[in-house]
Image (tube, rainbow, N blue to C red):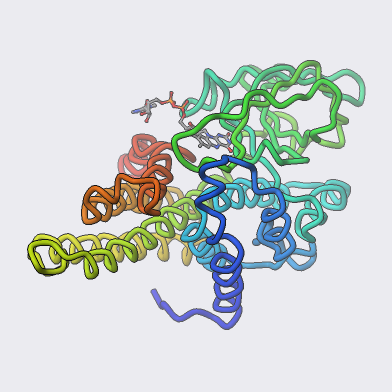
Length: 379
Ligand SMILES: Cc1cc2nc3c(=O)[nH]c(=O)nc-3n(C[C@H](O)[C@H](O)[C@H](O)COP(=O)(O)OP(=O)(O)OC[C@H]3O[C@@H](n4cnc5c(N)ncnc54)[C@H](O)[C@@H]3O)c2cc1C
């Protein structure tokens, strides 16, 4: 596994890192307090191609590979993990469109997002009664001539508060029992409305909201992929997206590590810096090792994807280890801060809250272990 970055990968990472430092970092604490959806920043990031990064140049996207995309997410997450998750949800939806959309759908939805003209896309699978068990979704679409009529509720939808276009999944009983179909729904479709915006522990400005579908009529031209093939459509994009969540976890953890390292060297206790205590030194050493292990799994998964090798367990390993490591790193770095780490004045406090959901969304840690075990055991 080589670690050299191509010129293009380096350029993408540098562009995103510069944007993150100059545009995202300065207001991140304030957005955490206000929980305001960062619409203007999302537009700026979209204009850099950040909302459809892997979309090919033929579809007017940057054509980033999986590794460059992961490095971009990591850079953004270091500065503002809320913006990073909006980015990941949009890129997940864009990847679904890139793999399945018709020419008409590319023109109406994918290319405008790739050009930065339509903000971020949202991805809607989860419902109040169906998260890990995605087969339990109850949102239903029924066809009527050239139209589909959708009824139901989606929950926990990232970026929903600011999105114009949603890639969603609904049961389509006429395609068979349990059949699911993927649809594109626009925010101005009659019968569509945003429900409550979640008041969350972390990622406070990511605009997570419920979606209500009350007899929403969408044209048959908005069906993504084949009717009844929604799970195939979703699963094809979910494993690569787990690598992006690994990258997001690493971004949060790297920023926390940076803060812990410098605080431990500055803060004087018993007449010496916190970093002089053997315990602090060992914590820093252990967390650096854990972070590098997580990086290796993330890089391996991205490289496999870029070599055209379909992965499942490797993506879950990357996501599981990076998200669990992120949780440990933010906790240990907060501990090095002592009481100050518990204050909203210190960035580590926000990172601690932002980190928690890494182990929950895009498949909980338990679900990742299930996927890994299934690969090992064949069932
Ligand atoms: C901030 C945030 C943003 C999100 N963004 C999106 C989004 O943009 N789009 C979207 O569609 N969804 C989104 N989600 C939903 C997210 O993917 C789900 O919350 C997640 O998949 C878990 O589902 P659940 O919340 O229903 O938990 P449940 O499925 O109810 O799980 C509860 C507990 O049971 C455990 N469990 C479940 N099944 C098993 C099993 N087989 N073996 C062992 N343990 C098990 C889980 O690990 C968990 O600990 C988001 C969630 C959050 C919190």
